[in-house]
Length: 334
Image (cartoon, rainbow, N blue to C red; front, top):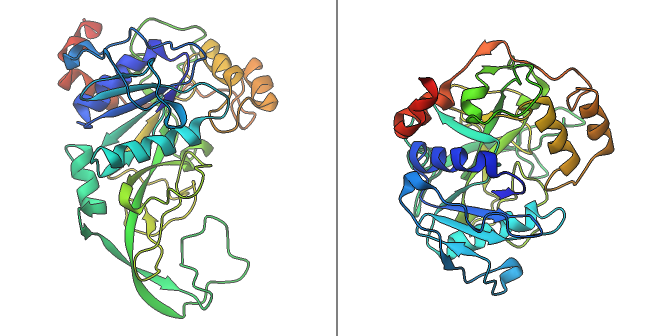
């Protein structure tokens, strides 16, 4: 992840990923001008994050970096650095022998409904090592794959042949949490504060986050979208594909089907009104600040010009998993 001014939320997010999803290593890119995470640690992981890192921004040596066996912190200042940071992360993870990567933000928590860990999910959908997962696809006369484009085709898809393709990525839909109509920040875990989600039809839920098999990631292109990534071709010149949890080929950053039977990315997008306004003032890691979103936030409106949703469906799935795996959080239920 890449983060700026996220210290109030980072420990909860890290502990969830380390202990609930059992992620092997977190790569955290500190986007602040001055390294904000110089003294930050995760007590539950019993780790000291103190030695100097070896690869800084753009591959240079940077003595502000901090590293442990399961957490890496890299100082990565500048505007619109999300794409470059994710690409640097992919290269580093590959060089350190990791096989998969899940690119996510600090306000996003992956919930698994049928798997016990993210590794189990990855092996199921993407395969392990040289044992790749393949899917059958329909191809038209121009070599385009049915479902591989997020844009509606100008004419009905005409299948010319069937092929098999390697699966290089798994897309999982957002499940947006409401803001409880809260106005100000409270010093409590996010997944304790916000336990009512919005309807699945909420527009932001069409977006996805991607779990990728790193060897199929195309590292020769810029990462321009934080939701999905270009995949490379196999030795036969056939493009690897992204699928959804129904094992159907999907393209782009949107999956309108909104699938939640296997996994969902619980998105604490809004939090309280004051926190949401700060988020919009800060701007996105890929696009930077948007005056439209800033003005909407001032009025208490979301991305689509609608009142910030409070949430109406009880959902404590993130909190339940966190308390189970990190019992110190039980004190907040007392």
